[in-house]
Image (cartoon, rainbow, N blue to C red; front, side, top):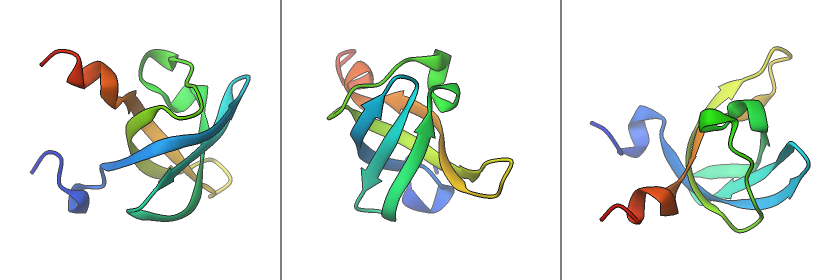
Length: 79
């Protein structure tokens, strides 16, 4: 079931990034999704325009945030 939308893994693009946080947009998720560098794989900093794969989970205050965020181009370069 890996990679299917119903397992909670989405694909999107980093809309904006500043210091250690930013927003991701995805045609599969309504609105902008907040992302902190703590939610990226290996705490990797992101850049505006990066293609990413991510999950959505609530933070401590119940706001939806991107989690397990990884760069898609890093995966594609291995092919």
